[in-house]
Length: 243
Ligand code: BLA
Image: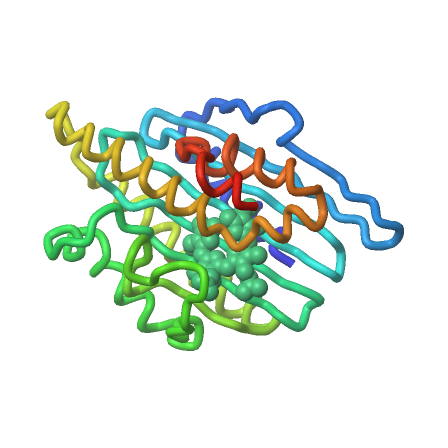
């Protein structure tokens, strides 16, 4: 269902950046859960470039039961540019949830003007994908922008509306990155290091995918995948022990 989205992102990345592979801890690159006819595979890819310190994406293919495409792009610590966050999920073809955003590191007016306002024009042309749904796991005011695409939708809309919207957001993201001025003051850079780490901690603690990963691959693998790959700058501490 989301194959063309993954291929588009991949081609863009390879055409535009000098990518180097970034290692994924052994055993986490892929996994297969074989429960008779409900086979599920998960596969992940990870790269870096001078501008982007971590580019990761994951595809879960459980046939008709579940299709998931998830990605986060982390800019270098020399840029205060938001993360590009992608989370597209389809369960049994009936329940399709899509989230796409420039995930802000900071929430002040100047940051908002610079990095979030430019999304507005695109968002306004894809109203049906911006449904203002309530968030149950995350706080919409933490690491989400006010122009995120967040929708419960159907396969036709995925092809005819989400795909063009996705391409426009990604193009805007590359433009944003190209325009960004690298930070040079070590204090400014440290502020980004901290903000990106806080995002990993927040995300690891709340990720609604833990249950999904556990059900296919077991809780131990799920914890490892979250804390050693997806959000590797988070420390497991409290949360892992309560699971
Ligand atoms: C929700 N994301 C979800 C859900 C799952 C995932 C299972 C719950 C769906 C439901 O309501 O049943 C899946 N999350 C994943 C997977 C990975 C993951 C497979 O991290 C990793 C491989 N989530 C993100 C990113 C964004 C994001 C980058 O990982 C930003 C675009 C958003 N996912 C997001 C939001 C929800 C969600 C906003 C709804 C959560 C809520 O209601 O609070």
